[in-house]
Length: 388
Image 1 (cartoon, helix red, strand yellow):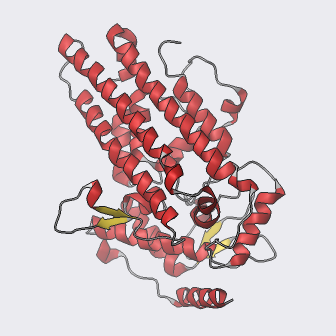
Image 2 (cartoon, one colour):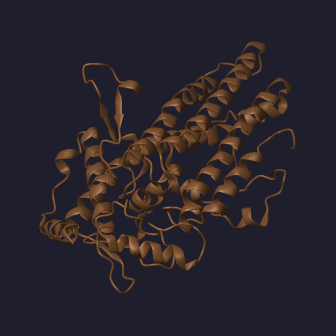
Image 3 (cartoon, helix red, strand yellow):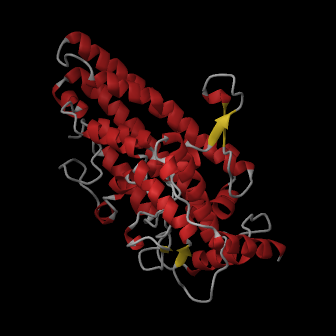
């Protein structure tokens, strides 16, 4: 009861806050990032700590949060909602400010919803995977800067680099697998995941969020954070020419469930990335140097290319197993006294929705989770040259 009173007092204060002018922040990219980070966290805290009503009605985000967040987001070219960047890429500080930036000198999960070490470990695991992916970006850059792709020296280098790429992808799989030892599935599902849910988390027919004072707020991208917003993984997909949209005729043919999946998901997730990241991916996609086409016509590169693709397919298999454990299986459980949500009624509402069995298990962005992950895995498998 005391938490409910405190929450109601805080929300009433938010409603009385003035709408701040964001113009002074526009000259500093770091200040813009910090502003997005703070406002997005406040929006999700406001929405998900609001006691539920007897009727399903849209959640109204007050103008004191909505208007400045939208203005800041337009400057950054990012969605006006909590994103992967807010929870992982920007959610850290230096352990020792006198030392240079390195993974060992970074403390992740500076801001938490649940206050649990599981939440902090979840962010740190995601950040470690991103950090390991930096070397992939260097490999891609070196490939695109090669003066010649047909001489023996270049072919040998590309083969070696594809081998390095396979090793990095396997390392990322190991990092992701490591989440099972540091993040309890029950804590993740009931104490952390509800805070991530965006406007469309309950599906397309459920009432979403309205940003007060923002014209056409129903047109905003408000799905919430997702691992699908990782720029590193998108870069890998672009480089290896993974066809998530089923535009290419490849074997094996897409299954009926593949065809029913959301083929625009990956493109949509790019709108939740920082604008500079999206620009990089666009430039990468526009490169005339397709590594897959080169491997198709260069026998020495076919096996190294296929090894990299199969390593990525294995990573997606692993992701499916993790999602099954942390989301699908946990959706059949109930919250307990460990639940950290400040409004217990919110947890009751979530439990009723999960127990009703109405509709598929959805990701935080509202997509059908099983369909989406299987389609991504199968699209990766179809890039293999050996079967094509």
